[in-house]
Length: 107
Length: 225
Image 1: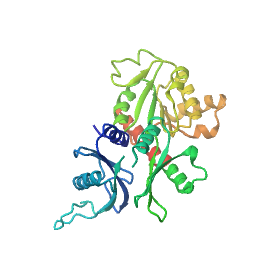
Image 2: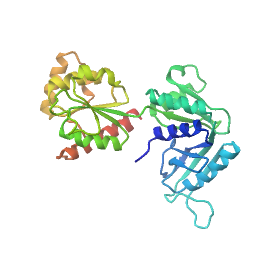
Image 3: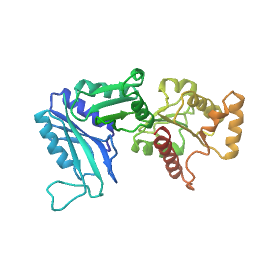
Image 4: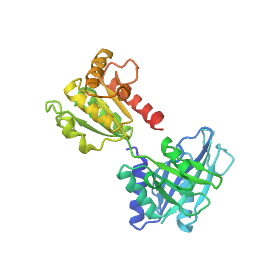
């Protein structure tokens, strides 16, 4: 089933209330063509379970990894993703746009 | 983000209230602003603009992010008709929460509408408890003035973002006459999309449902937004 922002933030609340470490990732800026609009959420729990999306699937893996760090440290992070570059280690967006994603811990 | 803020944001959504989460991207404390406490806020203007547009975004030089949350759109369909059977699953897929109102019990059966709430009552009884509001798409499909007309009047009163009614131009002209006689303003009348749906040459009930859903989407994204 497709999830709405409604389900996504409700899930984050449920996880947090169950005592899990939870992070919320939000698309805060986009430049050029971007797969998901500003304000889109991805929520992640401490086990790496996630719901929602901040891109068409291009950078979710990396956002989840960063989110686990954020859950550990408690310090928010601003991530930027640009065009996919096969030689780079970081993942990128195949659509050619750029996005900024803010990742913060709940609690 | 504080868990209390997340809970408050989710509570506002459940109560169908618009809210804005203000986040300092440099890591400062976040807060929630709702329409009733907006006056005098240091970000009053950008927050008001964000609520109007329904769009989240960065404002100011201090890297502040506004997460705008407007209530999820609901849909009220008057008439448990063939088009409604196609419209309900489509509306669901697009994130709407549809309900059907039709006092004609032969139409409003569980067999015809297995997975949706159908109120088999007259609009004056069924509609008030449904909290029809400006985040509601309202579609009258019975073709029967006894049912559609009072329902449409309710939709005007609640300022629905989309109000559509089935019927040819000729049928609609008669409807305008009838509603006018009941004191509905020309301004309110001009808001009715009739014939309902975008002109895509739809013939089958499913195609008509697509044309209605496309017009509702347009109103939601370009009207409220």
